[in-house]
Structures are given as structure tokens and as C-alpha cells.
Image: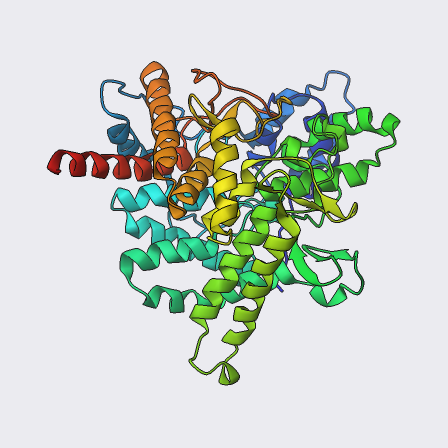
Length: 518
């Protein structure tokens, strides 16, 4: 599947030093150390550590600061002008969130160099992130930065060519997982701006993206088999789940996950299984949410890898639909495009049969081990509308539930459960605001779509005027200045929030122009 061996991550490279630093609270945020750059060859640092750590006056923090350069927060030094519009602020910020093409690899650094410039989210997120990038691109398109959209697509094509897939981000510690597969939508976005020949340019990488997600499907031999990212469901459908090949604590959250495992073990939870489910949730982008919790409350009940996810399968339906068009010839007997036509039809049928719940009037995830849908009702259930797989009758019922329960003063809330996890009540996130907005427009629920959009834009404006920042997530229930949840403080910057704001604001301004002209 890959052309290059996967590079070593910090835990593999620094061994005991890595463990001691992460468990020793040298940095408040576990991600800081794995993003540090060594000042000397790692082998030399490790040798010195073995000698010095046994000395009675050894200071671990001093050793680390002497041997490593601490990373900066992206955009941290940028001073906002709250007297300007949110749009103007965002457009000024693009250059501060854009990294130039990376140079040669730095020995011991976790960064995987990319050959073209790219936008990072901001704050502690100093690297490109896969699914974030699509929503960032929405804003770049409105800002006229098609060049940067192409650069980032070329970076993802490079990663596919180099490693056989798009990792979570361009860090060594992300190389065991991907993220929601938005690559085809990114190609579509660029094709809309530059012409249909764009599809042909990225055809090889689109095919390899599909290969990655469907890898090992030939090993699905019986009704309940799961392997890698594929699962046999209802004895007849080959569908997908989020997955990670590793069953170790994530290097970037090492201390937090080791501590969680200590509280989980007395409950009979096997640490390796816990770590694997956590990593699978990270591949989903929803890290973390009641959506993945068996009891919808406690982190120790996480079972992500047992869940066949509705949003993921809708994204792969979109990829298969795109591949049908890209590989096509008019005669299906003479072309492999019939393969993808059949796959997309089959997956659309499965989305209807496996994920739709006629009792709740919503699309649910599916627990492959239990053989039934999960109880969680979340915004992931809107993806069938985003890709127009839902029937008009289903869309109407989804709309009614969204309007009754999910629409809050600041936009669409992610789930209806308050757990303290960041992908739960009361938080709203830019990518899901866009998915709901477009989904409702797809089925003619224009008034509700605009109402949710306008509330989200108003909240973004309110927070910007008060803080000078665009945030990673927002408290949409209380339309508050601050929000929380999760393993790290709310981050500002922020790539996908900026992108969705510009795309939505463009629609709002177009509507106002039409109103004035009518």
C-alpha cells in the first residue's frame, strides 16, 4: 500500500526519555514535547540522558529545555483589530496561518515535510490536518486563493503517493490513522474553480484513497467480521469504520491516556483496547463525543472501533460516485467505472437500510458487535442529506428533529448529551454547521438553513468583537464568549472556522443584494 516506510514517532525515537517527560509534567500540554525539535542528534540526546538522569541533582525540565527547541503557537503573536469586520480580519489572518513549503527533514522532528505551502488551523495545531483542510478551502475559494487550494491538494497527493494514504496530519505520530475522507470534495472544489480536467489530474490519488479505506475487505468472511477499516454488516454489506493500527497511548496525549487507563482497569477495561478505541475516535475527527461511548457518558466506555459510522460511509459513497465519473467510459462493459457505479449504488442502499431509524426519524451509527444501531442522535446523522442519499420524506423528518432539538441560539449543537467532551452539548463546530446548512438547502428547507447560518455568523461576530479571535469551537447553547470540554483549552486561529464563515457570509450578502434589487 505504501512507497515509503513510516517514519518513527517521538515515543519510538526517544523511548524512556519520552515516557519520563510526558509523565513528569514537563509541559502542561502533552502535544508540546512531541512537537519540539531536538537541538542535537537524538542518539546523542538519549545517551546523555542515560548518563545524567542518575545524578542526584538531575533536573529533567532543564535537560529538556537544553536539548530541545519548544514550538511556538501559530498566530499567537498576531494582534487583532476588532474595529474591522470579521471578514477583513479573516482575510488578513490567512498569511499568518500559512506555512511555506517545508525544507529538508529535521532529524528527530515529528514534522513530515510537505513540498507546497499550506494553512494550519492555529494555536497548538501547527501542522496540516486532513478534514479541517476542506472547510478551510471553502474560505480560501471566497478569498480568491485558488493557488493555495491547489498547493494543499498537491500536498495531500504527495502524501498519498509517498505513504498510500492521507494521515491525520503531517506528523510522525499521526501516521497510524487518517481522518474523514474529504479528498474527493477538495478535488471537486478546485475543479469548480479551474475546470473539469482537475479530476483527471488527481485520479491516481483518488483511486489509492479508495484502496486505503477498503484495504483487507477480502478477509471479511462471515457476517460479523471486521478488519482494518472494513466491516461486513447484516451479512451482505461491506461498510467502513474508523480505525487505527496501534493499541498504544497516543504520543500527543500520552499522560492523559495512561491516567485514563489506570481508572479503567478496575472496571475490566483492557488498556490496549481502550487506546485503540481512542485512536479510532481520533480518526473520526470527533475526539471525543458521547457518540463513541457505550453509556453515552463515561470515557472508559468508549468503543469507537466497534461502530460503523454513518458519516464515514456517506463520504465513501461520495468518493465512489466521483470515481464512477472519473474512470468512466460510456460502455460499462468496456470500463472499470461500472465497478464504482455498483459500489456507490450498493452503499446508498446500505445507508438506507443500516443507518435509517424510522422510529426516531434520524440516521444513526451502527454497532457491528451488538448488531443494532447505536442510540446516539448526533449531527453525523445529517450526512446522508449532505450527499443527497436521503429520501425527501427522510429529510423532512431529519429537518423537524434538527429544528426542534439541535437548533440553539448560536447555531447547531453537536449532540444532545452533555458529557464534558468537546464534541457534545453545548458545543458547535464550523464543519458541522456547514454540513447542516448545505443539507437543509439540498432538500428545500431554506428558512431553517438560513436561520442556523445567521445564528452561527452572529455568534462568531460576537466572540470576535469581544476577544479579537476566531475560535476552534463555540458554545452555541448559551451563545457565550467562552466554551470548553476536551483535553486542551479552546484554540484560536482558526482555519475551518474562518473558511466556513467566509462561505456562509458570501451567501448572506448575496441574499441581501437580491432583496434590495427586488
